[in-house]
Image (cartoon, rainbow, N blue to C red; front, top):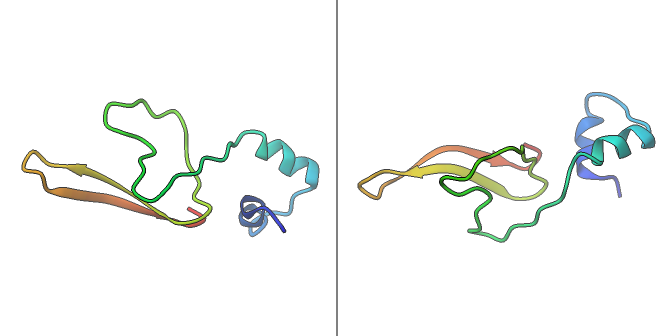
Length: 77
């Protein structure tokens, strides 16, 4: 089975196994359950994320308690 990241990249440019291994060495897999946070308020973010499966949302909660969604991230995003 081809790695989802490799499949995504190869939609644009073909890769050798060595090239993909080099790219993959810069990534780590993080699994989260539904309703689990990747980043919480006040945390410094020094990473970028690529979604293999599922959907993420970015939001903030206003002073009145209302949630405002800023963006959604879907698979291969």
